Image (cartoon, rainbow, N blue to C red; front, side, top):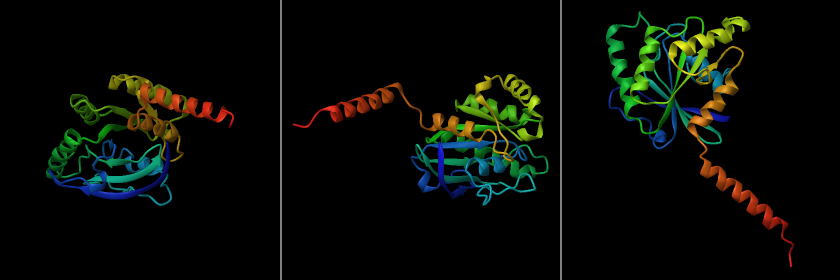
Length: 227
């Protein structure tokens, strides 16, 4: 997948509030993770916005208080990236956390355009209890889930694969569902983009057959001599 441009399209902060009109009918992928997992940094790196950040990176965890929508123009297709509020930060007031939970769950359980969720986990700590609760909820409502291990640059290269295997085992998923990612170096960006392409724009065997047939027909016509 090649990212061409991205724009902030709007946000929802209240239960029942409609998503941005431009997002209606467009494939969507949501990014979920606990506060301070590096979600904003990952999104900026993934979308090629490291110099002019589009997702605000804050030194204070828990600052994202709405569900933010980003209109992404890309090849092979356009989609919306949805940034969910971070969870699990103890200093966030309990009242605010009670507000976030139904807001997030409401979106995840009702969005018809949502194709899947990228669940972020800090490679240094592995999945927390909050992470495991989030993963269980996603499995319960049947949303396809990918996993990105953030801050991979914080571990020595020799320890990263071991951390990946250990995390996959704790999550109960295959290692091919987990991507190592460093927002600092960009390692893992291409792998995650390729995985998102397959999630957002799956190619069916029928479509592959039609494409092959069109190419073969075109070649045959070109080879026919003119009278």
